Length: 170
Image (tube, rainbow, N blue to C red; front, top):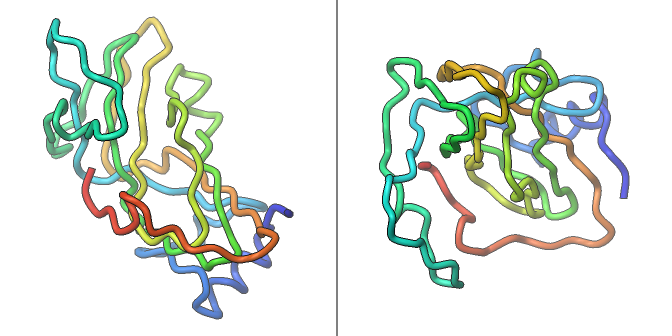
């Protein structure tokens, strides 16, 4: 396995094997692609009732969508779901890892709690688990390049066909 650098990422895009929609070449760094926050987030409903953690649980049953027409103030210790503006379609021999960007991490914003992996062959917009670890509210805006996707060449090929294969909404 090897991390793809800018020249290889651009070759994969030019060949049509890797699709980023919409695509901005300025978002491709030395070894990653910046992805931006879409226009909708999901807020976890306040409740004293425990959320059951089992194989059939669906986060959408415990959250409400909210438009990011206006900035959202993420309180300290709180978590929301966002989704990338970009749809990413990976070839069967490339997987990816979402990482936060240091400029925002240094302010206390985390991008994912534990689900940073993009399977080979996936074609979707990726849900982000935004958390505020700082002691101050953070103002969240749509369209900001919040995270970066690091691509890795796999040994062998695979196609993800799971629950979130064609996810388009948060």
